[in-house]
Figure 1 (cartoon, helix red, strand yellow):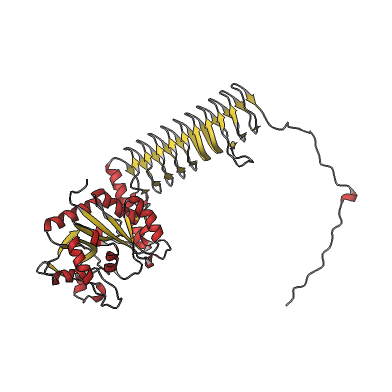
Figure 2 (cartoon, one colour):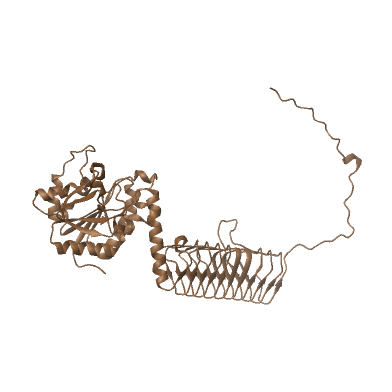
Length: 474
């Protein structure tokens, strides 16, 4: 649901993120599969932000590639001169109405949080409000100092007294301010500090000097969680995975161990499906009802129908699996593969761009690529479709219905095998086979009974060459 209040957002995302110890810009680090800044932008879009301006700096081009397709505009901060300077780089003088200023490294914020903030600010009829939160361990957060309940100051932890450090209400780094008032305060910021930076927090004291009281909006502690290290990144990811697991369990999905199951936000799973630990379900994967997903499988953009049984240690990418199929363990299905109803794909079978018919079986140790396999066909152990030719092109193998392909068979594409055919084990098939035929393509066996190898002749015996001893020096 979008909100009716008109507001724009300035997202601060220019920092290098030194504590991440990574060449990747901090805001692009993935949280449960998505760059953290994209999570913030998605929430802002959901509630109807009129404009989203992202202040970029370190890794500018990479950040632009993520934020601009999401509808945000990038504004460069050439020099890192503090948060106040970063806001100025977003050209706020061209904004109107309410402006939400926040950091791009708060991936746990949700659309409902934003709706609440905007509503509270509009109802307060103030010109400036600071979003705060109460946390158990305030750490390095700036403390909210009040006088008779009103905000008196934001004191940075490094500047706080022992008593001030006991305060557990902190500044989240989020501000709601009227655009005209913001543009009045920003030119007044000074860099009279050891870092020679322009701090956005100073707008609170500047507002007081202008005779304006500053409001506070108390938010859940989750909103204050910012990612500044790999440890915090892992915590944020774990939180979102557990949140998704909880949502699915409330819809009737049986997740055996939510702490060790990794399901991204846009994954859908039907009621009655059982998901065992260690599974990673990604990128819009859809799983039907009453399925069983055994431990430690990876599904990426997979479409799985009802009553499918996926055994342990499978790897699927952009595939479709029809009702009541059984896959695995240790099966790999690559893009473009479709598995028919009640088909069976066993251990150590790999398929790529295969239409595998209903009731067909490839029980173990086979590679099928660029192929159409008919209904009820059996693919024997060790079968290979030889789809990649000397000309570096890939060719299609077509196998009809109810075909028996014996073990250790090579099908040299392009080739067609007719319905109800039989291929003997160990064959290398290079020509198409008509329906109802049997094909054998292997060397004739030669058996020599009572065979004994000949003893070597005297002139064939080589005299042993004696090697001189080698002394080790030193």
